[in-house]
Image (cartoon, rainbow, N blue to C red; front, top):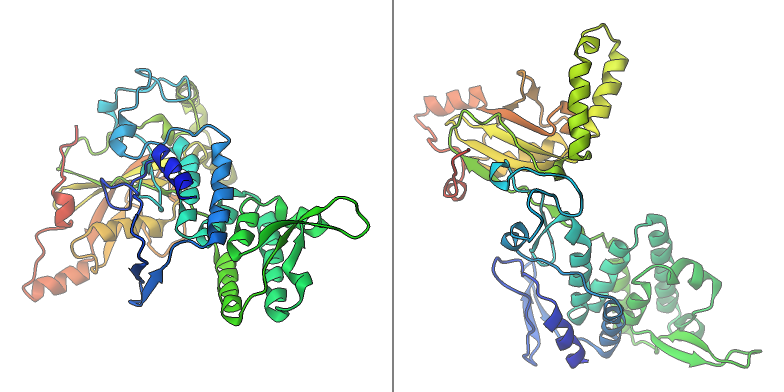
Length: 425
């Protein structure tokens, strides 16, 4: 089994959550002592035989299909050998990367810390989850169930059915019928078997695949059988069932790529890569021509409903938005967002970048519109797509109190951001 995992690891390289590191195997035979978030120490032992079986079953799947190449650093992604002047995977001409306001849209894997393109997310996360089997087969199989299956109703049905299996076993631990699952059983076939990761979870609980005779049949059938459990093992099963119920999909997080620029007259100029749009370059060009042709029409009187419908169609053209915030010292903070991110997400991004994030502040949109942090509106609904320059202002009353007390904060942004300040071309 160890050789199996070693062979897998030779083919797959990941970043750890820390930059410049890779996932490595701990060859020590000693249990690993971990510090939990609550401060309590936990001892991690080597994977059990059941966990190894579940890991082997899951990892065997990826051995049967070619592995997609997974890039694990932003530098590698940015230097991919694509045809000059074209976007990857589409005949969409793009501008010189040096002219772009942002090189592209990237994502961060929450399991490995790797920076990924949109096309790499799914394959990378699958590989990362499979690698978790050696460490924690229960956690890995829970991730599989909630991540690999897109139909939420099917996932819920499988989770509820497996939970019922566990509850029956814990209530009647000596009843053999509750510890045997016939794989041809209609309920199992319809609600469990079709959900990827469900069998791996049962095996991680300790179920073993056995061929058993069936009354009235000549041929044996496959069963998943759980050996009789002691009270401690039953409590552990309950805890693992709760982990299954609390499971969430593993999703790559949008890399906001925070950048800081010196004061510049070019702050309102944006050159965006194709990923920001739902339209191809040709479609965008046609849209621009149509807009020019419809200037006269747009000047005509339209009803409010007509204007709102047109604005909604316009907003649906964008996937992401690039926002810049002009600060009181003239510096410019930039970040990438989903077009449907809500205003509180924008305010939190700005607050986390400030040296004095506790102070209240305002954000003013183009045209003088004041944005309200408490308003649960999408950026697209406030016409902040596909790019916009906002103005930052401290709360005047608080600033007056600070000034009266003789205090003043000459620096707006955190030092680590200012260390990377650039000139906006």
